[in-house]
Length: 232
Image (cartoon, rainbow, N blue to C red; front, side, top):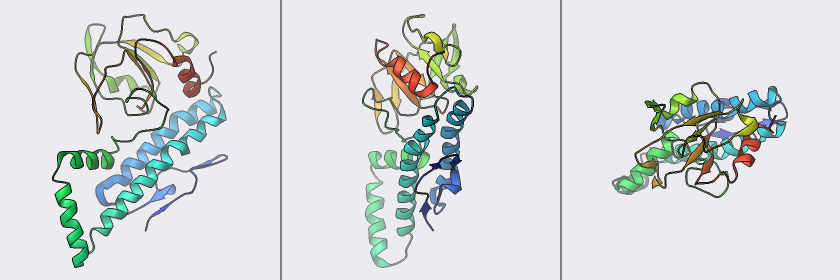
């Protein structure tokens, strides 16, 4: 059985996980997508409850997660169809196996089933925008630090990779952690590959990039307001 709720939010009612979508368990995608729903919703709900952000922030939960759920349902239905034992399905399975013999097809499927290929539509810009922040080995205060450790407090973080003190977050300083860091390797994303290194990234508490700096602070104020409420 495969079903998905028409909307993940109706007033004060919010759906996540199996309440929002059910599908065959092939590929183990159900646990991953349910946890991702909760992580996407949790920080937004907290900000609205605390009156840091307007109620409209909760609308972005449905906008971002409903397409992801629909894609997973589509994927699992296709996998179940390939499990039928008739001659036509076996022939189709042979073709699919041939396609999966290519690196590009395997990478695409792996990114989709793991959730690492999720891309939220946050507008035009750098390829990082709306994608999951890579867990880079950063250097900050002359010591190594993994990028994801900066998210352990469930707070947004702005990672400045340019000159120390170059970024100013003004009256959001009590909500957003500002970290000066450096990274010497390539920036590589699932499906996309190597991308141009940014000079700064604003990372939401769910690990997704909400703004990318490319030598300027253009758009930063708007991104801070959109995701973390108006300045105090």
